[in-house]
Length: 312
Image 1 (cartoon, helix red, strand yellow):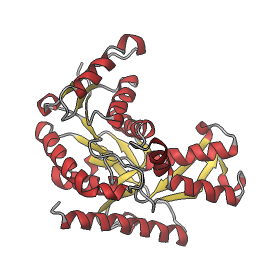
Image 2: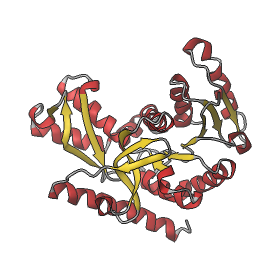
Image 3: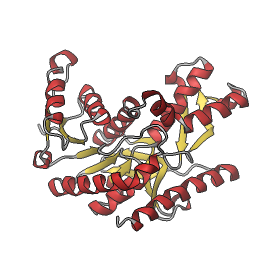
Image 4: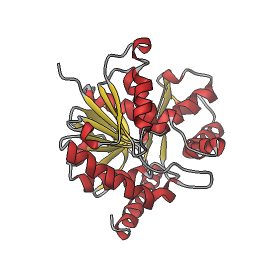
């Protein structure tokens, strides 16, 4: 029986955590890649030795050589610089563009039919770059953003309401940054609309906390950025694709006519299954929500234009 093959590029905190989540879910054989000699190999061997304890059956290897990734069904790209205090995701644009471009070329050369999940920031722009560099169909390239942002919003709702996160639903659309669009109207606790569960002032506070959730963690860590939740979000997307779950998850997917985006990757509800993004679902937005979404989309367009001026 052939197992799915998953490559994870970047053996830092996010990439290594992706490997752990993927192994714990037994999604397939894992190849962890990093340019630092021994880093991926050491973390992979450590994780492989947890198999008898954690109960997963697939192999985990680490390498600096993309030849070992040949035939990958899916790759999660986490490589790039992490944010430091005072930095925005956009500050990483030029350096991470160089990294993501090189990584993407190596991945596609080894695995022409791979599906790419991009985590590197700023993720909407990096997803667009990865698709252009790879020349893969847009449905086979997707960015991790909304699953994380929505999970953060769901967490903050649960904390405010004293509810279980399992019973909270929320959607965050738009670019993965300060212009993201938390949709309060589509948020609920146990099926009850959020507006009936919490007063407006608390809702406003948790919306703002959602927008600044990444910066809050960067400020606390001081020498890095979030990794547990981002990696869990990426693996949630990977599972939906590899197991053809056809789940509707918010992520940076290619939109043309959808939402009037006009040919960019931006955070929207997308159905993920075998082959990648199966389709994009369009929410009925109010005038205010539409205006906020359009501002967020324009911020993404601006980053993509900046990439072009940098030669990407």
